[in-house]
Image (cartoon, rainbow, N blue to C red; front, side):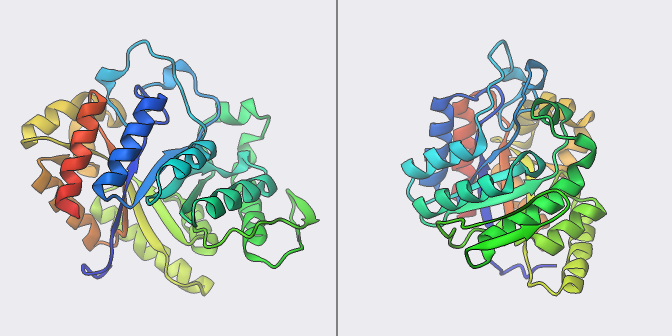
Length: 322
């Protein structure tokens, strides 16, 4: 359990996929988040994204999904461009599908972005859960856990060890000089399974999970910290990714988010139990409940029917949080 007085940070998920996945909306959400005082911008990471995945949105709503193209803006290049335009806010890729990325190239890309943006990048890696991504890049889906472990070890070796360096594993072996040095570049690990928690405890500077109750979150943090202590590593940050909907009243927030929550979770009450929905005071209270069980960072994915609604919610909540 965290000390309620400890620092907590907040990030905003940008619409690099979903009904508002276009350049203007990404810019606008990013600029509002920076101006409002948020600590981080987040984008997520997939390769093949067919039309039926449009409703699997980063931010938006079911009502906003019509006949638009299922755009998915690539994660690292999006962060590079945003980092050049926005001077302060942190830059994060969450669910970076590690087994689809050559760790040598990924290390080079991440170090470059981090150097050129003043050490503002965070990578939160994942094993991936959409077979089409793996088919598109001819990567074996059934080996994704093992590939993730090997590639994550390789990534850490390139970023952390003196250059030149060498690395050997079952999946990838190499030697070379990989510069520039990245500077401080946190690597987080996502997941709530026992292998995922072990991976985070072994390799991560932070950990992120998604859509769980406060009771389950506390259980996961307790187990994560047990594994971290066994690995002899220092305490890591604990993140929580979830949907947020802020209304003038709780009823209004539920009205805005109900179709999206039912589509995502199959049941409104399930969605309300793991998401942050209500007026701004209720949402802030829910955040405090997660803080009390160990959450250090919140990745907020706003549900709204248009970009004006999304940015209005982000501004209103920031005024309460900061």
